[in-house]
Image 1: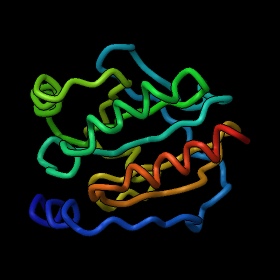
Image 2: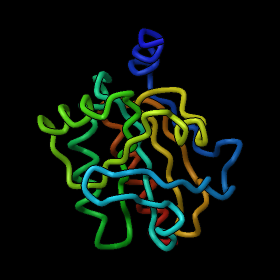
Image 3: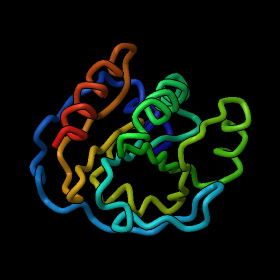
Image 4: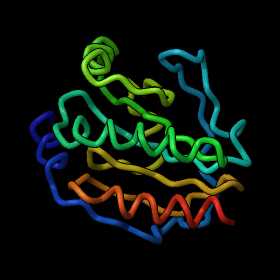
Length: 161
């Protein structure tokens, strides 16, 4: 399974743009976070949320983290948040990576992959963009250098609505 996930991790990025569940309400969940106690998605209505599903063993995930941190810092004042959802079975693996690549955005732990399943995550990393009304608007699978330009375009569109 781990080899399959690693292969998916390195697969090319795919912008699904309008997934089958586009404009459907995002499934609500509560997860423990690294610094902020438990966080519940439905309590964030009014903000644009980028759920970024990642794993410590995923090279593209590690490459993407500093870029996501920059996006979070840049757009947080206008109602945007990145939530990093870690899917490692062992929380210690994620914490070790975060010591090397620290981030300021909330990091949540989905060790049983229950939330990942709610959002149909099949590749690492995967990002789900949720609008201010709590609806899934975009899904981005994988990461390649330069994808952040597409992220900015999506973020700007959603915060202007």
